[in-house]
Image (cartoon, rainbow, N blue to C red; front, top):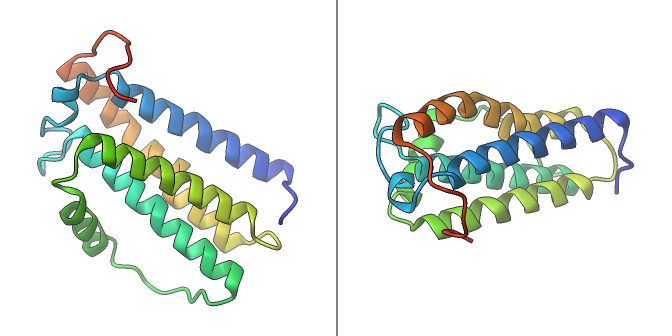
Length: 159
């Protein structure tokens, strides 16, 4: 298991802060609004965004496991193709399942990162790419979208 450096702690803190912001925004929406298309022009809903984020976190977990096992081969990834596959596979899934998948994928990614025998710039790149940099890419539009569709009073409408 790798010892956390100051840089690692900063990366974990940034990931956690942006993850929390993203989910606070989504959780502020009613169940109906979470499924409402319009977050992206392509017809994505906030639920689709959570599925997208969760799918990339799951992919990062796989990459980190491969790094630990010594089987990782850096390859060019066709991001648009993978996004389309993720969207297609998660489109009809209920929000509570999408949310659970994203939470599980995030936990798995973080566990895989912590289980690496030593630090790795490739591992850090995948953490950033699928975690805080990815969240930061989507949070500004999500803030706008929540403002457009409205917030719900805080409450336990989704666990």
